[in-house]
Image (cartoon, rainbow, N blue to C red; front, side, top):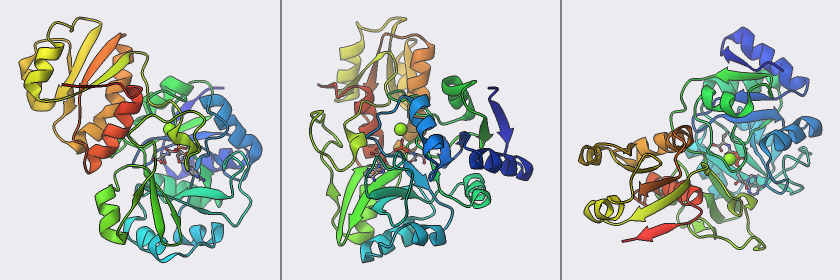
Length: 336
Ligand code: TXA
Ligand code: MG
């Protein structure tokens, strides 16, 4: 199969909607990362996603919607805190796990009676779902375990010849996957941090419970609210090590370790202290979120064995960056 990168013209959007109706997969842009989309009601189409990504079958997919109307048709949940969250943050980088009231593909929801619903602010995706008339199950458009895709070339790298089309929406604005929360009654549990930060959630609805596994390794047999928390994620082939401490202690720590197969990743204004074997993480959490998957992919392009990362700020959007980075590092953190 030839994989085409298509400009998001109206004609191409209709063409992609037709592909999706016929059970093909299409990679789609969102404001967070690219998604690998299929009709969320079509078992065969959704199975192709799991097969192509190599994704464990117990890890449910996020289903994308184009309106509050579609949301209301897929769940009967109307909890006060749920309404507050969707009114404030939709469309945007927030996924809510709710009880479903329709029959999604059993593969999409991993046989659960809940579903993760997300109303993305990306206009291309909104239009595409509108032309389809059904929700799109779409996990991040990368091979399982490897870094997510934040531009069409990343998607092509992972799925060239394996999917029908990639809709070109340029570089993703945010660069990290959406915040995932599970809401039931008056309880909200954060399952995955993202650009809708813990602080923003708490400002809107009060106390939010942190799921186990956000910042520590989980035992594989441990029961968790979100299966995705257990699985290995975002790793390049190179070994990633997060180093926490001051910049001067970082420099001391890495100085005799760097070479053409071992690099370090430092904040932007620190790069001048190195003349080689260094990459820039960006100067603030926003830039670091946007750069992280790009850097992790670059690390493999450079064929590195090892990479030492400066530890990002662990609050606000930085918490989401930290959450992804420690997974890429298989939870290996050096405290100086
Ligand atoms: O930004 C994003 O959310 C991207 C773009 C493409 O929209 N999508 C994405 O999807 O990251 P995915 O499938 O890679 O992430 C799904 C996460 C997993 O950690 C999964 O465990 C959780 O959401 N999830 C989905 N449905 C769930 C459910 N019913 N119960 C608990 N967790 C669920
Ligand atoms: Mg993913």
